[in-house]
Image 1 (cartoon, one colour):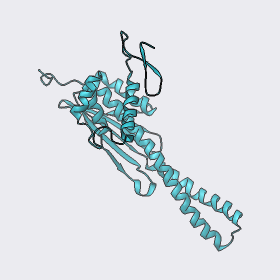
Image 2 (cartoon, helix red, strand yellow):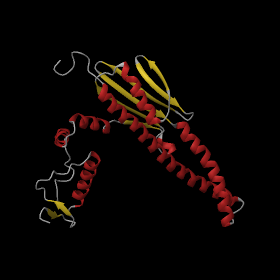
Image 3 (tube, one colour):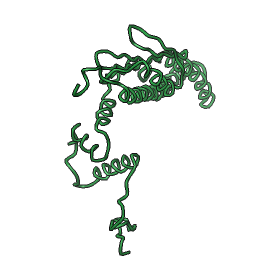
Image 4 (tube, helix red, strand yellow):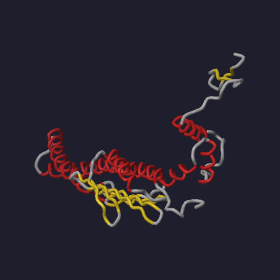
Length: 256
């Protein structure tokens, strides 16, 4: 083992004499960095002080050293910081309305629209309808349980992306079907098991309705988070695509 040394686990690794150093792909880089962060967190006293974090410029520098265009660091940061306006979670157990909005430097040309619409369709798995309102291109789809609308508008050297959805009808359908039927069936089954009858059945039904309602709220909470992830996915893919095709108007380009 003249050309090899043992690592901490005892496995042989190249010492590097005259051999090209292994290069890691993007998925491996992400996994290694995540694992390193986890190991540092578990370490008794290793690494920088907790919570220090990195500035955006420091992240750009790390990206440069890893061979990643810093522009995509800015794009990723903008995507993570995209705020989500949520409404309707008090009764249902989770939001039933969402709205996301972000602005990208540069304008998109008409020839780029079909590619952007294809991104929307492939992410939401729906053909949808396309229209134009006051210079804003809108893609919309309603499956009978609520509309989802994606808007794109370019003006004054920037492009705005809006993604919104209303699923209150879906939440209402889930609650309206599960609570009454679940309460009746649950009460009948439990009353038969414990031998309750008469006025005791009413008390049992009220208690069962409360349990079923709590379970339905939990179920909608999961479904609601699924919807938000789906809308975020649309926003992320559109943001990346617009970033690739958008161009600043003549005279506003750097050095122009």
